[in-house]
Amino acid sequence: MFTPSRLTLARTRRGLTAAELARKAGVTAGAITEYERGQRRPQQATQEVLAAALGFPVTFLSAPEPAQPQAISTPRPEAVCVAQLAIEFSGWLERMFVLPQPDLPRPRTGPAEVRGQWRMSTGPAPNMVQLLEYHGVRVFSVDCAGVGAFSCWHNGTPFVFLDPATTAERARFDAAVELGTLLGHEEPEEFAAEFLMPMTQLEGTHHRHWHVDKEMFDERARGVVTAPTTAVGMRRETSKLLTKVFRALFRALRENGTTHAAPGGARADVGVGGPQRARVRVGADGVAGWWRTRTGAQGTPYPGALMSFWGKQC
Image 1 (cartoon, helix red, strand yellow):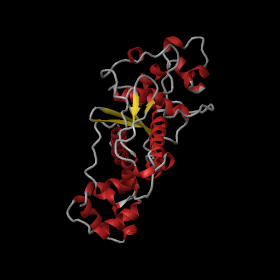
Image 2 (image 1 turned 45 degrees about the horizontal axis):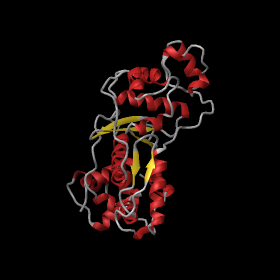
Image 3 (image 1 turned 180 degrees about the horizontal axis):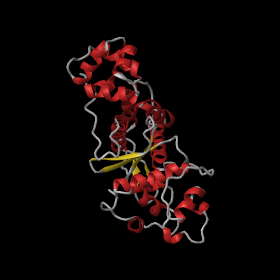
Image 4 (image 1 turned 120 degrees about the horizontal axis):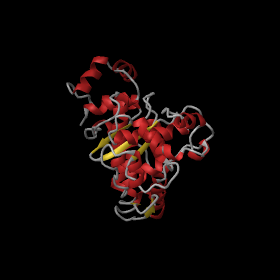
């Protein structure tokens, strides 16, 4: 069993050309091209060599066809492959947990209306990562070869990808921009500026009240929309959902004896910031099985190892 598109996905994620992968794996560039086009099927030993050269488990190359992101905000292949991996990872999370369901307003809803529908209080928008997660957006922070922030849909679920190399202020602005993109706004930067800090509430306030840098605040007050560029020591906004679901998951693993619990044996509820809940669906052996299949590792995964695998290797 071999899935040609999986080889392309893994190679693209590693930032390798066909010739570079061929050199690492000791095969010809023509062979890589034929493998990826489905014109030849590599032998099992060759698949193992290719997987080792790419730093992926060999089972990755024989998994089903990867999902295709919809309405992705950038066509760059690096972004598409990250989105495919995120969709797969999100699918695993959804099988393990009951996650918040998408709750985005209708397309082209204005920033004031979105704030109203989401019952946001007067003042600056709260933690953007947690706000998006609460409303069913899957948010990932992934290094993607200088692509920057982008977004996509998959089967009705919205995804936002933030660049971990940017400042905290820029990441916050990018999250709001991608929300505007998901809603179909032609000028998502305008949407983001008004969503984060409504023009009518600027007078008499200070830039630190809005959790943005002074340059952005001053330009916004003058009616200029721009992305922030200067950090003022703001802490990067982080995910509450993933922190809570992984704590619940690995608490269940400990309670059920690492890798030998029966499927469905653990069901622990965790709050994700409001009335919606994330619930463990399967037992520890299901988790460990997924972990071994995707990474080739033995034993029970733990939060740091799982997130390191996602962030640094895939």
